[in-house]
Amino acid sequence: MKQYLWIASALVAGTLFCSKAEAAPENYGVVSVGYTDFEFNDGSDREFAYSVAYGHKIDRQWYAEVGYLNLFDYSEDDLEAESEALYLALLGKASSTEGELFYKLGVARVDVAATVPCGDDAAPASCNYDDGLVAGLVGLGFDYYVFQNAMVRFEYTYIGGEDSFSTNMLNLGFRYNFN
Image (cartoon, rainbow, N blue to C red; front, side):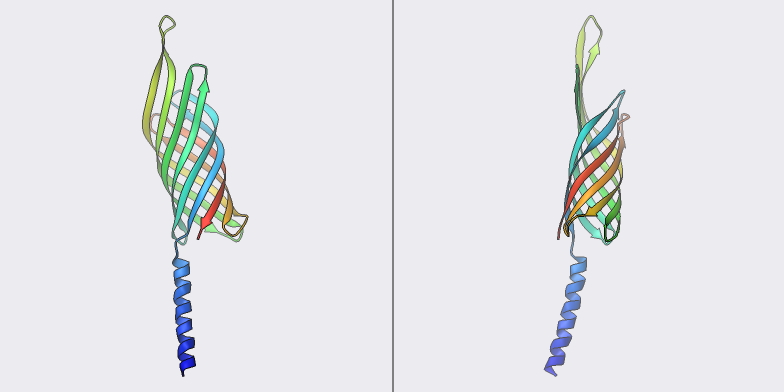
């Protein structure tokens, strides 16, 4: 009788343990480098970009992700411009044995600082612009498994916001899953 009680207890404990293991939060970190094609006011260019992010699994098919983007650091003649952003996004995913296909929807706080020539030929001057913008973020990507907890991320992201700000980013990154 005691054996049956012990086996039943083990089965119940195993079932509870498996349920908790499935419900356990999955966290991950991503480091990416990429290429950005940006437009702001009357200027545009293509630049190197990088980003870091932290994600948390909130449901079987959903992640919440918070991150930092260095969008561009541009310098040419009398014009200097730089931009970076903090974002919060929701990722919907479809998993397979090869990896996870995901889409990303979010909002970003984009900081843009620029020094541009202004004035006329008789009195040249430079004007400074430093502002924070609100932007929307949309992305599509694939996280490809290379090891059990390591993935390679391929991602396209579009960010668009106030003052005609927009950027298209192509990123290649490394994702590490913390279980």
